[in-house]
Image 1: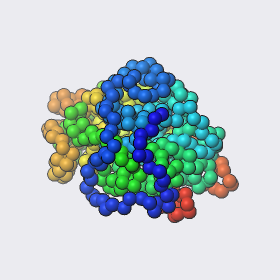
Image 2: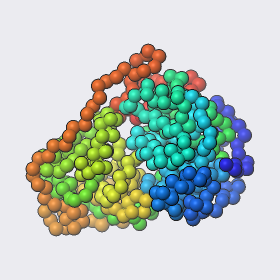
Image 3: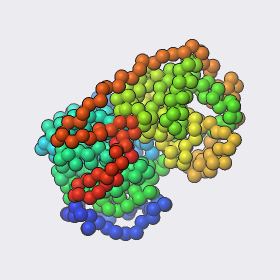
Image 4: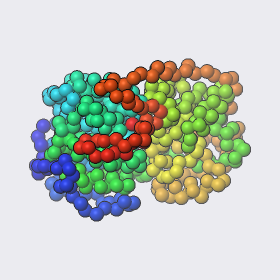
Amino acid sequence: MTRAPQRRTHRSNSGSNRRSQPVSRTTEFAMPVNTVPPLPPVEEFAAMNMPAPLLATLAAQGLTAPFPIQAATLPNALAGRDVLGRGRTGSGKTLAFGLAVLSQITGKRAEPGKPLALVLVPTRELAQQVTDALMPYANAVRIRLTTVVGGMSIGRQASSISRGCEVVIATPGRLADLIDRGAVRLDGVGVTVLDEADQMADMGFLPQVTRLLDQVKPGGQRMLFSATLDRNVDRLVRQFLNDPVTHSVDPSAGAVTTMEHHLLHVSDAGKMDATVHIAARDGRTIMFVGMKHTADRLTKKLLSSGVRAAALHGGKSQPQRNRTLEQFRTGEVNVLVATNVAARGIHIDGLDMVVNIDPPTDHKDYLHRGGRTARAGESGTVVTLVLGNQRREMDQMMRTAGITPSEARVSAGEALLTSITGAQAPSGIPVIIAPVAVPAPRRAQGNGNRRRSGSGSGSGSGQPRRVGHGRPQRAATAR
């Protein structure tokens, strides 16, 4: 592919040559101004400089016109420019960077243990979603993908990379583990993507991400996508992106135009009945709660009331989480009761309602929960149940998010609740969902040292780990 001029020529692995401009830790900085003018947007995929098999796969899937973030960033990414994309989940970011990555390495073959491209994501579910979305296109150009996440066999992941793979899609913690084992080296990585960078910051991953980025090939192409540019994401932009082409889709504006937002005021005594009636609606629904034990308790209540429900949270193993999502996708389960582990990285076609049983803690959590519906321009509804002592906090959150919701006081059995949510009385006949099989524990493969391969939230043992050049690294909170 043709490379853009004025690429970076060297980046020290020690990080000593990074720019050291002061940045704000709490507010968003101005989007960078390009010194090299970006290429103009392209209105059709067929007009973009991509390998023919990728264009054929897009056409076979009925995709001819790119979404705005794709139209703006893809021509420049295909030319080798760094990219900074700001936009809410569901705006088409995965194909925006995925098609560029695959185009840049088509026809190349990775050496064992040395991938050519790296996609870093904050959660296991997002890693799997990215893999699933890109697999048809990767197959078309004979590029091998490997997903590297906690909660799954680290030995199998190491074996897959050692056999050779061109693209690694990884969470930072598990990738660091594999580097520790000597199973993967990043000095062959010429294209790097950071997806959902703001959540990586929220989860405390940025020091680890920085050390990983220090190990990729100097002078490579970098793409960073984030809903916001605060919480030190701006520092990553300044350190690792060179004259990036920028595109911004305001997250709150997107939410306003594609979703209906409702604050439903309920009493303490009536909240559970309203919840059960909403859950009994026709169609698939995600219900967000604040705690793992709350998710399990609500799921048990819904099942006993006749609602086909399942819980998804960090206390579940990765195979359990995968199976639960598959049950939800196929319709075996109608209601997914989730903690914030599902607020990013889950894409379910046709999901038209998200219900916040427990209100989120800030406006970004609200937007990302709501982002499970109204994806890719579709419509959707976000409902939040609000108790009396939560009203002031929710009003402030809506103002911060730039959202003007509809508000109503409701209770179970009322026509108003039904008209807004489709709520109806449950059957009352208990249902049983086939249990999710949990595989027997396996000893991790490798050099004989016992390691935790991760389960549940994927937290490590709490001991310091070493990543890359021998520097101590705090155990990540999720892998």
